[in-house]
Amino acid sequence: MKEYTTEEQKFLLKLARQSIEHAFNNGGKLQLSDADIPSEKLKEKRAAFVTLTQEGNLRGCIGSLEPELPLYQEIIARAFSAAFQDPRFLPLNPEELPKTKISISVLTVPKPLEFQDYQELLNKLTPEKDGVILKKGLRSATYLPKVWEELPNKEQFLSSLCQKAGLESDAWKGNIEVLTYQTIDFSEIEA
Image (cartoon, rainbow, N blue to C red; front, side, top):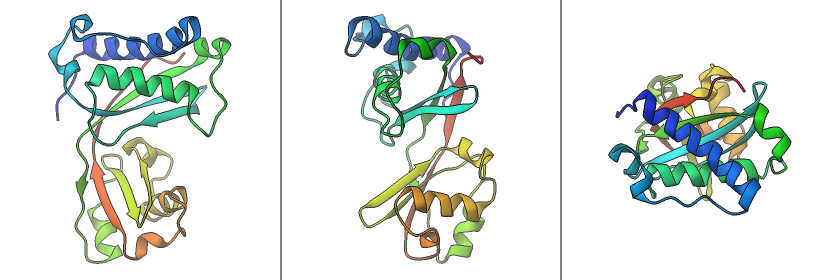
């Protein structure tokens, strides 16, 4: 998996913050062109999540699972959405931004996980490394690898993910589709 230099990480984190500041100051989304971007790696299409926290508590988290935009555009869009469009929270207000920490997770392309039964599913999951997408019918949900920190038990992790998808907590023991992915994670220093 491609790593990003410290400078590239700082650029993306600054870009995420600028995206939110731009919305407060000018309304709408920040617009940049490829010419404004200092690294070719940041122009590659990548899926990513932007997470906002305040004093360690989630304040917004929005992302995509499939690479559709150049990474820098993805970060601009997801930072805006995490701040203003996460349905679990009221939109961020300008007074909150200084105490808000921004984290970015850049994803690999999700791959189907093959398993015969739920015991094999449990055996194939790698806590703290695998992000997991769970699908059944029209319902689906994902947890980033960092969610393992809060839910280190595989059964609890999958049960919670089922509930997030609107399924019964034991649906993971039945006929479901599971995909896994990994992330490169980086964050601002605590705000």
